[in-house]
Every structure is written in C-alpha cells, then in structure tokens.
Image (cartoon, rainbow, N blue to C red; front, side, top):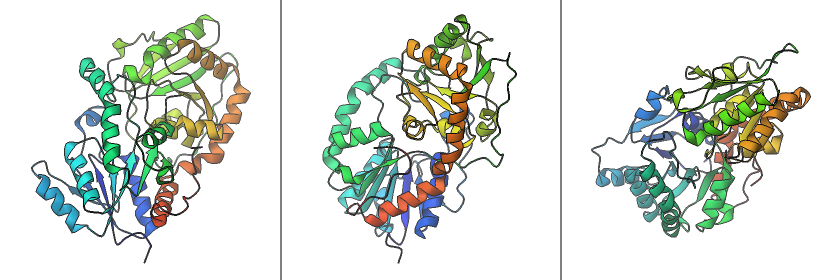
Length: 385
C-alpha cells in the first residue's frame, strides 16, 4: 500500500501544462493512478492567446460536461469516495466550488492547489470590464473569509502558490502546518542552455514574454526603458505576447513588440537574451520565470510575481518594487551595466533549475499526502515560506 490512497482525483476548470506534468509526476511518485475531472477541454481566452491543449500523458482525463448538474457532481464524488481529491483553481467555477464543499461535507480527503487571489483591481488575462474588475477586487477578501469559515478545519492541506497565497490562507484560518509552499512547473527543453555572446558595442538585450495587458506592468516597462536609454545605457527590450501592442508606448527601437512565441518554444527564444523582465503589478506565479531559469537566463521581476520568491532565494536574478518606474528603471540599468553579475546569476540558474522540474513537485505532493496533513511536512525545495 502506498500510504496515500487507492486513487487520486484532481479537479480543474481546464487542464493546462502548468498542472498536467506535475500531476503525471504525482502519479509516478505515489504509485497511484490520477483521474482529472475538467469543466472544459480548453479555455477560449487562452486558446486565442496561442495555448494548446495540455499533454495529458498517463492521466485519465474526464470531461464534466456542462449539462452535468449537482447530482452528477455528487455521483462522481461517491464513485471516488476512497480517493484523495485535489482541487486546482478551486474557486474558478461555481460547479467546482460546489464539488469542493460537497467533498468536504462527505468527509473526503481534500487538498487545494491554489494561487493567491489578486489584491488589485486589474484583469488576470485581459483589460476588459474595468468596473466589474474593481468590484471583484473589493469583494474578494470578504468572499475568501467566508470560504475560510467553511473549509479551514476540514482541509487536509493547501499547496499554496506564492508567499502571498500562504499569507492569505493563514489569514482565513487554515493551520500553518497544512499550508505547503508550491508553484507551477513545466519541463525543461531538450535544447541545452547556451551562453549569450555580445560584441562590446552591442546593447544588452532583455525579453518580456506574456499577455499584452496592464497587469503585466507594460506601461511601467515602456517608461522605464525609455528613461534608461535616455541616460545613455545601451539596452533593448523585445516584447513577445498576444494582444494589442498599440495600447502601450513601444517605440520599435529601445522597446519593441516582437510578435508571439509559438506555444512550447519559450525556453528556446528566451535563451537568446541576456535577461528576462517581468514587471507585473500582480502575477500569482509567472511560469515564464521558470522558462527563463530552465534556459539559464537571469530574471528581473517585480516583488508581486509569485515566482520571484524562487528568484530571491536562489539568486537567479533580482526583484524590484511593482508599479514604480523609478525602481524598474534603476534595476534595468543595473542589469544592463553589470555583465559579471548577470553571469553569476546565470550560473545560479543552471545550478538550481532542476528544482523546478515537475518530477520534484510530484514527489513533494506525494510526500505531503503521505503525511496526511498531520505529520512533519517535507522540506520545501523552492522558497522560504
């Protein structure tokens, strides 16, 4: 007997590569089959941004069709009464919220994989509906307090994505020993990391990868890049991502839109740059940070990027204050003017990038589940909690 359960059921509104590789690694580490219940096979917004369906591999993916009501959800839970249930993005859809609280009311073993809720009034994936976004931002803390009253005593544990998520779950009453630092994880590209060679007269080259939305800090990045260039520091920033580049002050010279990166090729593209910049006003994790470190490329991100905790702990780059053009301009100039420092960061990336492998995350999840939420938690491979 593996000490976990006869099976694991993971519930997700939609399965992405951020979770699928980790869940496959969990199945291998636990010796337990993993069934994934999904609300839809792909997300229309992410599809428009170039995402492709996740590689399900060994996972048994089952679609919880839109016409399946609460009786169908309860039947699925009863079918897997002896399983461990893991809810990813647990508060994204009403049916999955209902499934979560049904599972808890039935006394099933339940874990969450959860980003923090956004504390700012900005969209996660787009800049539309600003009034609705502001209302949601005001309501979120109150809604999560209500969730806490209902789930904090019954949860086996929370895989909390970022230090902010850890603080939020502690604030709603989840015991500290049941909160386990976590992240998102993607495999390393088969292409080896390569050192960037620049002629002395060439500018330092940075790269941004992400949606073209205000939440990603692109207004601040445009202003900071122009300020650095005006000071005489040679710097060029290429911006890759889906969206309308005319919304932002890209000048086509110092900071320019370079199109989209085909899905799955981020590491290969990022490897050709001196560092990655991600100045988000809010980012629950920021998987592009993983992509950069896996490619051996240092990272400059804001202090509101969840993955920045990994960057800080392992010296894979640096962080600066979010929404501050002054702080971002200073950090950009320092990165551009200090090649020896960037080289030390690159070496740090290469030393610790294996920690970001989904295999490590799957083993960590299996070890947490074996402890049952009551034993000593396994060492955290990623960041200081």
